[in-house]
Image (cartoon, rainbow, N blue to C red; front, side):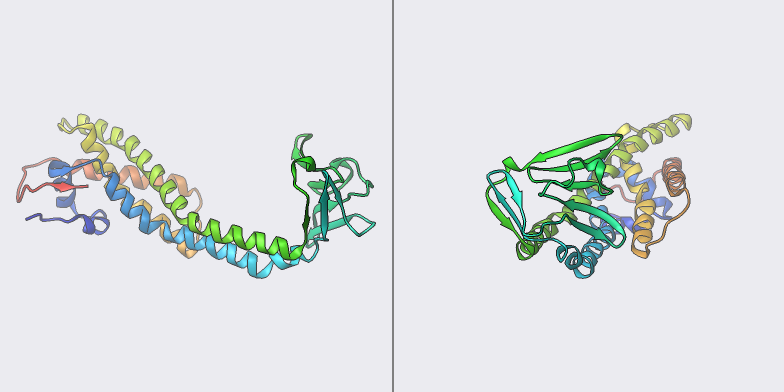
Length: 263
C-alpha cells in the first residue's frame, strides 16, 4: 500500500520531507499529470476574475457605447448614414472612434481618436506614425444598427465563454510544464553537487511538485486581487527554494514501503 497518494500532493508538497524522498525514489512520470490537475484548480481564480470583468462590462458599459452608434448602411463597398455630421463615440472624455462617411476628415491624423471610419474604409492608428486600413469593399451589403450589434456581442460572449477557462488552464499548464523542465535541470545540478544519483526525469518530477506552493499562492493572490512588489522575483526564489528542499530529501537510507507513485 502506498504511504502517499497523488491527491494529497498539494498539501504534502509544502512541508513533508518523507513525501519528497518517496517521490524521488519511487515516483514515476515527469509530474505533468500532477501539474495538469493542480493548474485546473488554480486557474479558477483567473477565470473568475476575467469573467467578472466581462460581466461588468456588459452590464455597466456596453449599452453606453451602443447608444452612441448610429445606423450604418454598407452597400457596394461604401458606408452611409442618416446624420450629416461626423459621429463621435466616447468613453467619458476619451474619444475612441470618429464615424465620418461624409468626408469631413481624410486621415486619422486629423482627429484625436485612434479610429476613423470614412466612406470607404476604416483607418486605425498603430503608433509611431503607422496606420492600418480596412476597406469596406471586403464587406457584404448590410445594415448595422444597435440591436444587431447587441446580438453580435451576445453571441461572441456566449461562444467565447466556452473557451476562456480551457485557454487559461492549458496556458498555465504549458507554462508550468516549461518551468518544471527548466527547474528539473536545476535539480539535477544540485544533485550532482551533493553526489546524488538522480536522473533528469526525477529532477523534473521533483520540480513539478515543488512548484505547488508558488502555484497555489499565485492563485490566492489573484482571488484576493492583491499584487506584490517584485512578485516574479519572490516567486522565483520560492520555486528555487522548494526545488532545493526536494533534492535535499534524496539523501539518507530508504525506509518504508516502495510502491510506485505515478505523477
